[in-house]
Length: 500
Image (cartoon, rainbow, N blue to C red; front, top):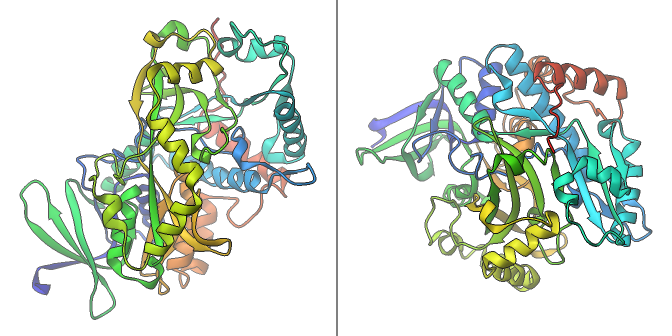
């Protein structure tokens, strides 16, 4: 069998935004390394990175309230928001580098400027938003944020949301940042793979990974099933990255590395309501995030988003959470069951016991009728009519469950890298902020898996990502300079008028 093995330097599993980003970084740092990519679907960016499966907010923590929490003393903890914004700035810089190096043309095909807003009602929430606004206004990364609790001002900002609102005696407030973005991660992923293929990266579509095994010399052998002709092939590499969205966990478990033990996955599906009617779409130009309901997971924060898909403007409202035992949209109903192993059974059971509120919430969401969904939409858009909106099934997200300092079976809301002690294999697990922070996450993979090369690579990394290793929050001048140049390179200086 070993005679049939094809050797390469790097194997990337999954043709999503993470593999695309890691492949692009490695091609710049060590152009001579050979890279192979295996993807079970027919094209790049078809699963978690696809524009219809991904919420597409350039997650910069400008509007997501779950990244800022209120402490017991009433002050606001903004550390997570600042951290996520810093990470998004790295993505912006890398994308700008790709555009200015002509590796990506027409940035407007994947990124567009759009205001990011937070909207709350009720006295307690308005007070929270005001405190959050004050805390973030001191940080350079959140410059230009505006706050208003004046309904007349809000009518200018969000006419569609304010029209027909009857509870005008109830306090209402919003913050707005005009420098937000809408990112089409599906389009970006396809552009990156086109670029990689032009650099002799071999991408095998319709190739499913059946197994990953350690070889006697410490390499990894990947067993690949060609779905077109049914043939099985074997490929070996010194380094394997598993970036298969929800499909990463079962593959990580196949490696048998100690780090893969005591980790489980909890799949959460989502639905969006979509409006494509030009006369309604034209009345809203922003991404507007509300507050999550009690018991809801952080990725279920309701939001009304202007999205550009195929360069057409649409409105998305949601997400409505759901439950499916599949780990991928194109996965199997046995995914969840097959992921339960002797080493993670206690972890999974502990999470089940702990997360009763979440389970109850998901069951309620699955049971929602169209009329109930419309009720939720009308909390945002009072005059909404069901016939103007259709349902779209979003991508599957698999939340990581692991044993942490706070106990067994803790559900993790975020993006996690799991890697072998010797750095020979790494897997990406988890969900939001995900794609928006892909560059930061892949730099983390490089640090963990190629520590012996980082010193030599650093100058080149800084050419691509000027703020690498530096806190922009603590260097306002550098932030301003970088923000201005990436705004120009990515064509984000344009403002689109709102049609009434």
